[in-house]
Image 1: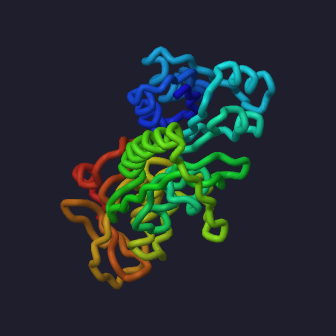
Image 2: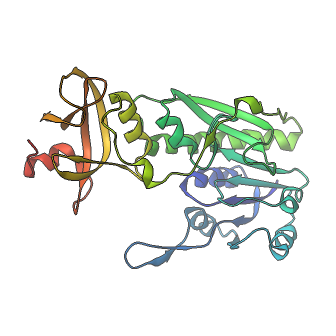
Length: 304
């Protein structure tokens, strides 16, 4: 099948690679423009661009896809199908109606739950025990198109965004492969979403970072899991500012006031929570330091 692929970050790379491995003709890859990174502000190509160039696939990086010149150039690639995975831009009607087999999207949630920019994060933040991937037909409304396929996976209680992201990226690529094959044989069945069950997963911000120790240990644990690696949780412990990248529930009861550091052990720092139990902080980044295990930090910086 002749396909134009649209995607930008690491999440989209397995899907692009799977389409290549399946023998489809990738006429072009559309991705966001290179962006400056790190201290030198050197322009860095998105992961999808790097993958495309490694396979000799033409790459387009328009600033805006709503301009007529952009979608006319897209039409010149003559795609039968457009596949989108975390592209980061909204496609206009002219693009959605361009390919004869339509436009489909790989989304990292079980739609209609968690439409929007950060479905993996919000599933963990909200303490979900299951998530998955959805392949859907694209519509002009956000993540509201008919569902072609879904696959669920449990969320481990200790899993964070980094590990779940990688699992869902691989699962999405597998499901995409099966769905494109079904589209090609005319066996794909589209099912409308239940609008009454839809929820939204908005973009993340640093305003979500501060840990409120009046919350339960489970809520705080989910917050740490859901905001790692970015924007990461933040807190002050005995007057020192930290980013917190990993923690665990202990189930240990305490009468200490929420936010009190009650002690340390070989695994980390014990802090009282609002539900009367202790949360163990196991990975931190102190101001001016690198991200490290709490145990390593404590060896040179006793906190109690």
